[in-house]
Length: 312
Image (cartoon, rainbow, N blue to C red; front, side, top):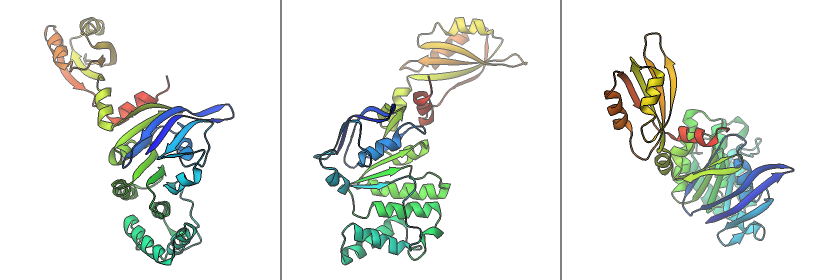
């Protein structure tokens, strides 16, 4: 559906997007995840043709961005972070106005607006002024605007930014429903957003793609690098290091806390495709140490995100 190859964008000497390549498939909900300033918005604006790339290729279906920009725009709906609405208009008048601009005749406008009212939950606000609406309702109106011509591709930039928890859930449900029929690309730095709505995640940091996979696959791959926490009594840290660092797959032992009561808390950094807990337990059993705490850190998307985007 969308093929991006070596996409690069410079602002003077600053490289905002650095040679990213990605394929986005028809019917996929793709989450573009990254910290603020990672290059997410710039990437989306290039995909929509709002910015032209410094170099690289964007192909949508059979169209090249630099040769068929208008045809590509006809395939897309775009909702930026703050919906660009006319706040002095009623919701109905605004949507009718957008439909006219998009070339829908009177009968088509009536049918399409009814469809969008149902999809986006706008029935109670159609005759209210846009300036009276909450940000969550504004986002719904903006989403209806983006969907007016029933585009094949929907691009959403931080669609739930600034919304309260109830509004976030409502927007997520709408996105999931749209994603049953459309290709959806959404950018966010909210990790729960990706897990709740996306089939696949691309993590971008400092303008580069640092991960591209399904969420569960990322967790499994990242699971080879994990941490195990131990709390021991009657143990000396140096002895613990000598005893546990010799286990294949344990790459480092770090002291977390040495309490006045005498217990020692350590964290083992492990890199292994197999579960090392049994081996660690058997090793401790052969010593005089008393094991009073033992758990493995749960690998979450938050852990993965922090590892991939932290400053080195």
